[in-house]
Image (cartoon, rainbow, N blue to C red; front, side, top):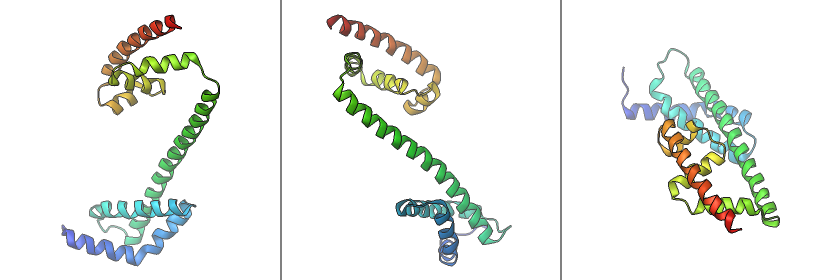
Length: 171
């Protein structure tokens, strides 16, 4: 039996009201900071709503809700770990920037100047490559095939080398 949107909404509201303790327990077991708990709680509520149409009634409501809540919490923890690692990289990059400001590196400055002079598409491609992204990741970011990334990156490198030679000759 296909439920209407209104019936789904009513069922969802009833479940959240009746079983919010279940959601709170999963949240408290998965997150420590109040803002993280709030984010995870919202994420679980959203995932429950998205998953409602797939509930077939073959198990108890609470079993299904636990499954959705726990899977959402696991996924949230993985993404939160990656987010925190990126945040730590940004912090360490800031420290490197401060160090670079105190100890200027002429070669690095020449590289950045050459990149700034390039067209935006090539400069972006080079920066992604210098950040260590794979061809596949770069392709996803800029929306082209991996083969296209290889060709464009090869051309951009040649342009950069030519610019760097010109810049270094001026030093």
